[in-house]
Length: 303
Image 1 (cartoon, rainbow, N blue to C red):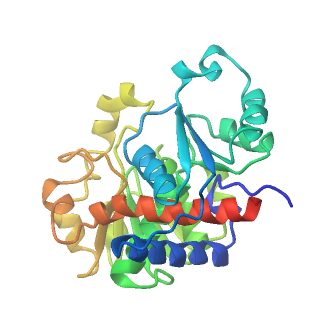
Image 2 (spheres, rainbow, N blue to C red; image 1 turned 90 degrees about the vertical axis):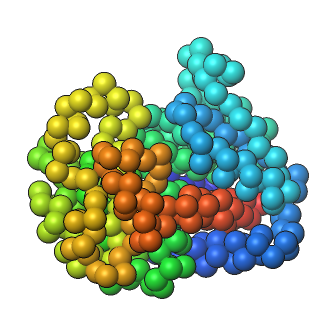
Image 3 (cartoon, rainbow, N blue to C red; image 1 turned 60 degrees about the horizontal axis):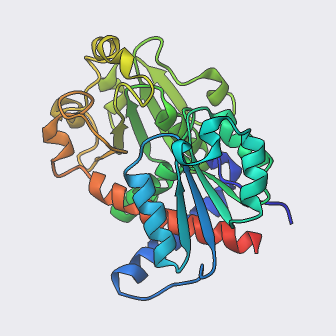
């Protein structure tokens, strides 16, 4: 049996993704009702972090613990990766010791290389190109609040970054329309768009993107690794804040999401992120439940 990895949403079929989300909702219900589910007893996950994290580390580590497994946090300063050991060698060693690897890094090619040389499942916990685990949580959150996302309209307003790229993939896998509003020069890469055949429009006017949308979402203007561009990006994105005016163009029951951390007063106003249409805290919590479903799926497939 070939090893399954989760590097982008396109690695799984739409049917598998929906099954995962159904399972995530079920696992969430079990957790809320105190029903133990320790199916990963004896399993160990290596968590490699080359980028800082709050929600990713907490959700994966807690998820493994709740399912009876164990996780090991690895940072570059604690491992030979930080001293130049080839990622291929790291993959070969870890695959002989642990059962699954979670990798949070900069270059997406690093995650692909790790997966290519790993004998155990590899999960992309964020790269510069994609953030698929966050999208599992986002879609789960939408389903819980509004039902099926198929046929709905999602407005991404802001930078064409890794989150936007994963929404591009999600538009295909979950069959929703995606409207992306961004300044010229900040579009998602053509290489990402070329991999999907989905209903996607790229535009400059955020009000046009928000018009009739069921979900509005965004991210910080300067992602990790691009902080030196903060001043120029703040100028470029000045008209792309999701505020009450932008929300008013969407459907009356539209939701607002943000992967966090958020900068109030920049990409989103305090009135929106702290308002009644915001579901960012449910979204953050669902990282735990969606990833538990993912871990269970990958480890069962590899056993």
